[in-house]
Length: 114
Image (tube, rainbow, N blue to C red):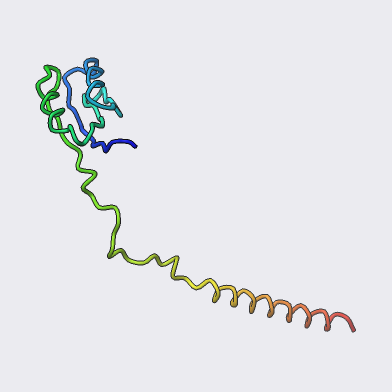
């Protein structure tokens, strides 16, 4: 089974040197314009890894991701209006409209047939 990983943003002076961060975890993205590296590190070794990365000469700052702390299930969410819509009522309205159209056609055919 896969170990739990946490996201880390590493701000670097030079993006060429950022390839050296591969030994600390999995690199997800390297931004050449903003000079940062987005990567994943094992959760059980994250404190030690951050301490080692901060000592590197090309690293300016290391930030942890707080995405794992954000809840993804919401209890007090408002219900969706589309799910509350009664489609049976709409079907009965369509059927009533079709019936009136058929009645009108039969009236027109009776008038035109004598």
